[in-house]
Length: 294
Figure 1 (cartoon, helix red, strand yellow):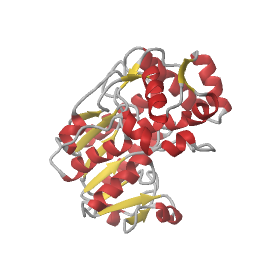
Figure 2: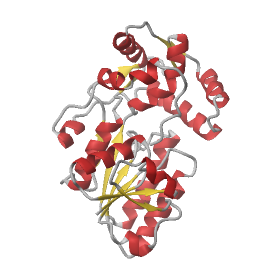
Figure 3: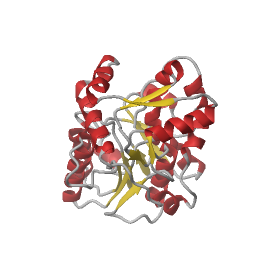
Figure 4: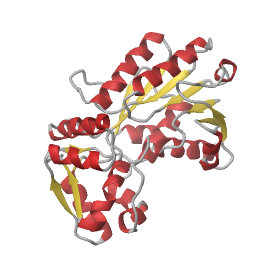
């Protein structure tokens, strides 16, 4: 049996759908009972959190665990607490952990990547079998720009000419299916990317082409970008982390393309044009979207 944490985010939801399609038994962990209503039909669930997990006798029923939590200030403590609960339950399941490309680089001090590196150090010390999936930036991160794209015909980011191997959450979920059910190598880092590395100017061009509407890239100063994030309600810790991330992008840290999606799924990673077409309503329709959770 597989336990899926982070079940209500983009990756977790796609993962549950794909496991259900493959008729692989899986259980979603939700924080409160009401969240189960939003899960794919027929998916089992259990109530619990990373720092308040289900009872030991429940944890012992899972042979494999998908570990994912939001990129927030307390992420390290939450994930380590959950890993410790698995150990305390007298159980040694195989872990498939979602990290982020760059966490494996000792010189990467972006706080999001550093969080994953700290959790990985703890996981490795437990001796549990672990497979790491390290996606590049999610295409879904572009959803936070839909308002400016609709209203100002502009994609704004302090990214300079840096390139990113944007990857779709559905492809990350498909790789996770393989890691949870197949023979993905343990103690290995699988860096997941899209089929090409794109600058934000390239992305603006693709948006213009797909939606037949001119959208330009505006490279804004980091200080101005941070002010905008704070004004939009992003916590200071996350806003500062985003500025660190964009500096990493500007310096080439995300300019990565791998064939790991094809290796895991047997098909090419989705191009950004395909993903944009799926999300046409978000880019062209009225209203704002809640920022994606992973």
